[in-house]
Structures are given as C-alpha cells and as structure tokens.
View 1 (cartoon, protein in one colour):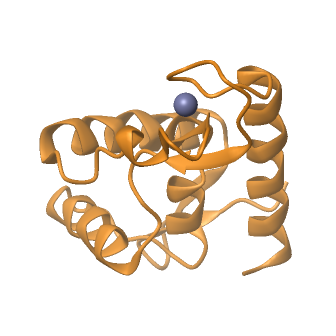
View 2: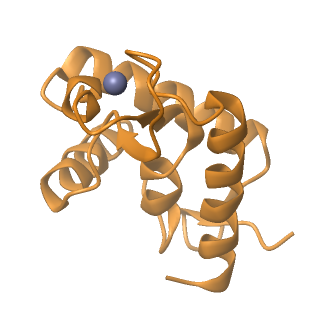
Length: 125
Ligand SMILES: [Zn+2]
C-alpha cells in the first residue's frame, strides 16, 4: 500500500475511534474491533469493482482500499457483535453504501479523475 493510502486509512481509523468512543455500536459494551460493513476480502473487492465498472468507473491503485477502509464502512464492535454488521451479502444495501462512499471520496477531494488515463486516482494533497 502506498504512503498516501496508509495515511488516509489511519485518518479514518482515528475518526472511527473518536466517533464510536470505544464502544460496540450494537450492544454498547467496550469494543475495539473494526467491523467492516462490506468485508475487506477479495470477493467483496471484486464485487465492488464490478459495480463500479457497470457505472463506467475505472479505479487506480489504492482507491479500493479507501472504499473498504472508509469511515462509513467500519464501526467499532465487540467480538460477539462483529459479524452482525456485515452487509456484504446484501447487494442492495452494499451498493447503496458504495454509492455514498464514492460521492464522499469525490466531494472530499480524496480521489480525482485523470483525463489522460481515464481512471480515478488518489489525490496527493
Ligand atoms: Zn457488541
């Protein structure tokens, strides 16, 4: 992973820890696991990439990691509740979340379109 990608992911991690205040977002017990709504595995990444392609979107290195590690795709969880946050098996919810995250990455200036390569790339600011 590039330095830029690492920095952006760490930024999301700090945000999530503050937002969720060290508590599981389901049962409110102490919890420090980062539960992914859409899991970070290869199959989920392929699913998201397919959906983006269907919308005519090509992405460069690191952009999928920004989607997977986006603050809206992660909640603090205890060990018991972790898997209950998963929506990777619910295409309608997962696709809606992807659309929201994608808009946020663009509006937040985290990614930009490279006209020459016709691909979305990380910004360097
Ligand atoms: Zn819990």
